[in-house]
Image 1 (cartoon, rainbow, N blue to C red):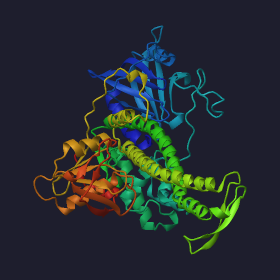
Image 2 (cartoon, rainbow, N blue to C red):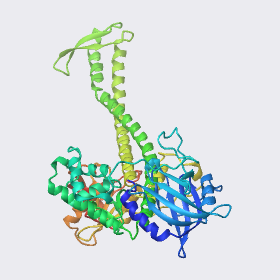
Image 3 (cartoon, one colour):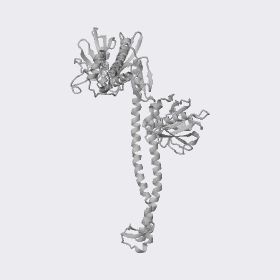
Image 4 (cartoon, rainbow, N blue to C red):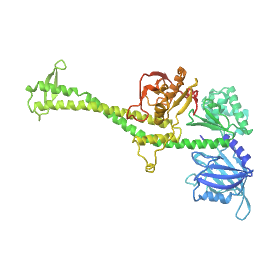
Length: 590
């Protein structure tokens, strides 16, 4: 998900109205691939971030601050020499490409007025920021140097002539005429999918925009071109043209779209995206504000993801080990279940002891436990008949004791597996770094991970648990725990004894509390709370998920139980199928 040419067009329009004739007061380079410039115009100073990051290349205003290195990097020093103190003459987008050219007028060391051009190429891992001498179009330097070893087609090195990014041989949306559009669609390989054909043939059009064009036209995005009728193509043209005209007229409705828990960004654009009408949308006054919020959110989600992966790796390693242990324990239990055969063998040896002599390695006897069927019992020739019988009894008693011990071990291992699966689910449900820190501290307390040395003398952090809060369609408060600490807090401290408590039956999941408010809870509220319990469980993607519910007074925490572990009684069970559509209908307070 990156900046497309259409959204960039709206952004450039905003930058032009704010920055042209502005003075570049200061240039910083807080990251190896990122610049920050203070630009003053009309009495107002704006911070402009310009990033050539492989993951998040971008350019926009920001109110964020970053720590700068003590010694400025060479490229930063170069920019300070050539453009700091200069004025911005123009800001242009190269066609509908993701390339922005900023023309800057500044004085050189001799006091002569010169023109430099800062080229911002937003091209994923090929993104770059390049400073040119406008007089001869030669590269002064770039934030990323591209040598022949990196690219044999286009080098970016000091002293070389600047070569524009290679043409994609696509059609400009500016040239969108109805007859040409109709002919083009008919000329493309008829087995191609509609939305792919749009972004593969028109410059500046991303897959997201292509799908939006189809949605606004009322045509299924995955239709093959051969399935389109003449009228369908005309609808697509009208939809396409309306979007281009909207942008060219300088209009915008900057929008970020999130999933129902705002843990994932589904899309963003300089206009409203009707393909996501059932999702959470955040609208902004400007594209700059949208992009600043977008990349702050992405940075936050990336850090959550990174920390989540680290915790998940540790838990999955422990979980795999426990599952292997459980498999071996079950094999031991199965072996112990067969202990009766040793007891019978001992008794049959005793009953036939007069027929056995030392040195015999087997004896055939009648099994009076099994209709006097003939069976053969193996003997140790080095033992007396009595010793052979005692050996069988000892084996029986050993397996009998093992059965009890292994049964208890299996219960402990299964309990630990259930706990660890709950931890994994909590990591999945974490929406911020504080949630993950609570989980990490719990794992330290439970001795699953070691405390890091730098935390050794620190007091335990006290994060205020913030479970998810919903309001049912009947107006009842519903709370959902995101981790074990929150689950314990909700169930044992926050809730009243007559509130309703819900949890997926025999499936790792969140504790859910419905506030009773002194009156009976409607069935629809129980249904909505059950949907939330199922959705925030390991069975999230399943159908007919069993959810138990009971009054909170019927829920108890056994002594010594791990966080989040409880037992309950007097429950009812409801079966629900959680879907994002159903969940999105429930009013989320936080």
